[in-house]
Length: 305
Image (cartoon, rainbow, N blue to C red; front, top):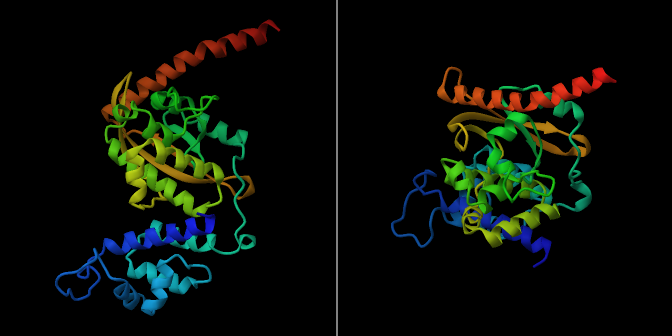
């Protein structure tokens, strides 16, 4: 199967999965008793979107190139797509256009020193930068302490840089580290799904998805759900090997980089006055105590010079 066929299959599977989850009642349509398909029929989506059944059938077969944004918006409304799913549909449409009209973002750009200085200055927040493939490409000391099982995992690369998706799906220890491991699985697969829509030509991303699909039944299940997630925030419970359970709030922010690349800055912190804040402070103090001798030695060396 060539890339174009792969892309058409992705469009088809996504639209079919979204159509299957909406009942006629949810769409404001009369129910006609027994139905042979889950959710809405194609002709019902076509009516809701204001297009012909033939046209919508062609769209659901993956022929999305050249479709106007107004029509895509009508289909998104008919399928009751949320903001992330709507963005994903538009990304799929852009990716179907001729390559000269969709320049790819440059991959694997280096994190500028000023970004590393920024996250290093955050002493009570775990902060790390990751790309769309979920590679952690920069982190502060507290992030490495909070997520020590991930950084120490054999799924990390030879430079010690972890990949969040590989850790969650391929390291059995992640089931203990993430208290709600199933939620971590679904969110991570949905983030990769969104990135695949933005960057369908990213060979490394496709290889990662292939690797996870081959080695992880859980990933295959999540990938087949066609869920999409772009915005990433909320709360997460971690079972830390040194300080016990941590309940942390997290927020991910877009971090524009050179060459049109967009990375993700993710911050974890604890609610003030909570037990988790006390434990986070303990980790921060452990980080500071282990770093202090190195700084003192450097300073002594500078004085002796």
